[in-house]
Structures are given as structure tokens and as C-alpha cells.
Image (cartoon, rainbow, N blue to C red):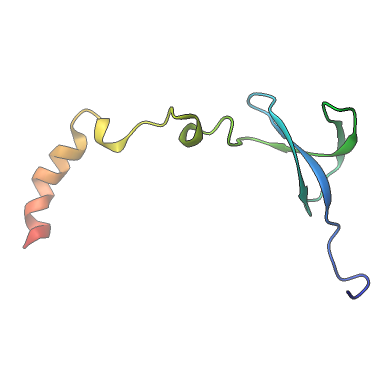
Length: 85
């Protein structure tokens, strides 16, 4: 490998701000803060707005488009006939 051209690839602590979920993975992300893991290691910390622990798609709380009070069905009734021609 050439010297000086590769990013700083290291273990980073990611923290979900919405629920406090923490996980460690390897990353090149630039960080300014340090954080402690549950096992006591001091690692660079990156704060996230949403992770798999808080995103509605992954938690199963996302609403289906078909359950929106008949809006999808009304749209299909109005414009489905013209699209089929």
C-alpha cells in the first residue's frame, strides 16, 4: 500500500441520539468527540439522528401506503383507467 493516500480506517462508536443505542464498527468518518463503550474502551464517537433501532422501517412502526384511509384506492379509481389505455 502507498503511504499517505488512504483514509484513517478505525473502530468508531456510533450513538443514536433518539434512543441512546450505541454500536461499534469500523469507519473512515471524521469525528471530534470521544466516547466510552459498554466494555470501557475509549473510541472516536459519531452521533446519528436515526439508526436501525429507531427507524420506522426497521422497528415495524412504518405505516403502509395502502392503509391511508382509501386515498390510494381513490387515486387508482380516478387515474387507473387512463393509465390502462
